Image (cartoon, rainbow, N blue to C red; front, side):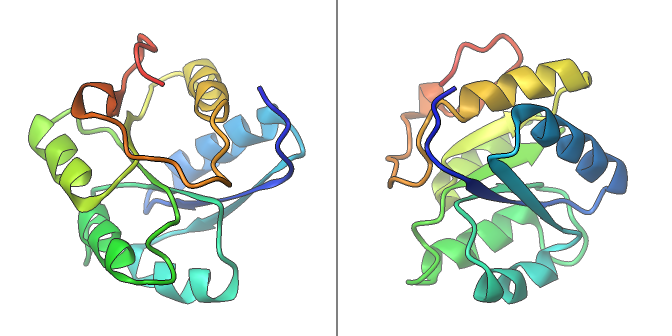
Amino acid sequence: MQNMGDYHILLVDDNEDDRYCFQLAIGELGEMYRLDCCSNSELIQQYINKSKPDLIFMDINMPNKTGIECLGELKQHKEYSQIPVIMYSVSSNEQDQKASFNAGAHYYFIKPYAEKVLVTTLKKIFQTDWKVVQAIPQWNEFVIDLDFSVI
């Protein structure tokens, strides 16, 4: 893992258990990662107005506004359109993946069941310098699955 300075990460997920597991996994990566969480899509705009993150992980299935709808809104906003967003979902549905890709997500990360797999995958994700504008990958490299064939 490269040392590229402190990272400010925002996780948007309505599931308290998923937020907790993600927090534990980020904690294993070291002190250079600061994680903040939003429990629903309605709080994202308010949050990033106060503190712009370097990277957003966003769940798809949330009440009120879906993660894909929020992603679309972020990418339409001039000031926030360059913040990289990784969709983070239990859904392996190709329709969700394509909708995320078309809305401008940088990757689609399927939530693993084991914390160890989450930590390993996050290490791979943070081999990329997310403080530098990153191009969205081609479709065949977009989904991060558990065999680590991506990134």
